[in-house]
Image (cartoon, rainbow, N blue to C red; front, side, top):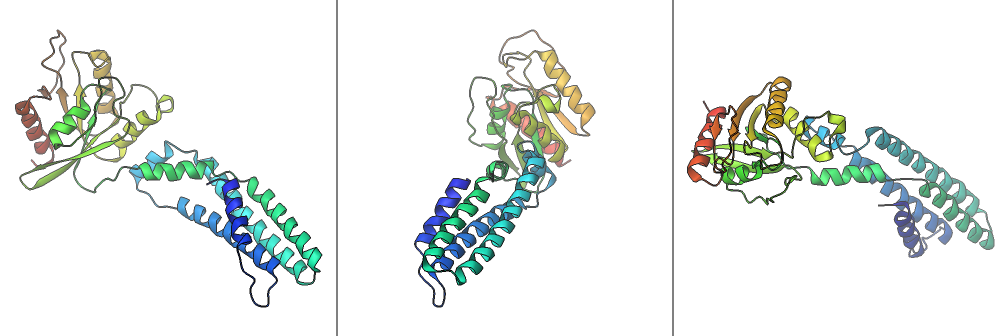
Length: 298
């Protein structure tokens, strides 16, 4: 939605209106423009006025400028007030105007309302609506987060644990958004979420996908599966991965299972973890699944 589209549609509707009984066609036309513009703007304002939980709210905050959104909404409300005043003003003038004068007033009304609407920007509200459409659909149930640096094997673990089809790629930043799956075992169910890569840096310096990961850690659950790649084929040093794990332990009051992946790849690095697995080995995945279930159902 932009101001040009809004005006074009409003004027097209006015062009197609039929004269109402006891009302001049010019008044019918300006009323059609007024109604379409103000109702469209009201709908946009209403769409931005939503109640979100902590997790969804923080995700949205990572993508929009809240202060700019508030300013944008205030400008939309003010514009609607001006359009309503213009309608009343021109309607009253048209009631006693000649035919030629009514045509001039109609053109003037179009010009005045165009000036008002053209000053509007829907940039932040459009960002909000796009972000809302992209929000992951999470269930209110026991939830496990899979965390760790990019390309350590988080998406593969999610796919193997949950039997969920997840696209993977052999390069960093494979997971561009939160990916969700479910572990079902003996009548019990756990929601599992793979987060984007988390970096050891301040929140302000993070990219949008990194911010989502931190937000998820703080708002979704206190159960975490932290994945480490000791082989360093992920492109990140083991020491950096261990540093990130320690930072998460200090920052969050969470129950954490640490798992080292890619045990089939030869390396001489040592790290302290709860499990070492090859995500392509069914027996290893089953061991991990049992540990995860014990984390929730002791």
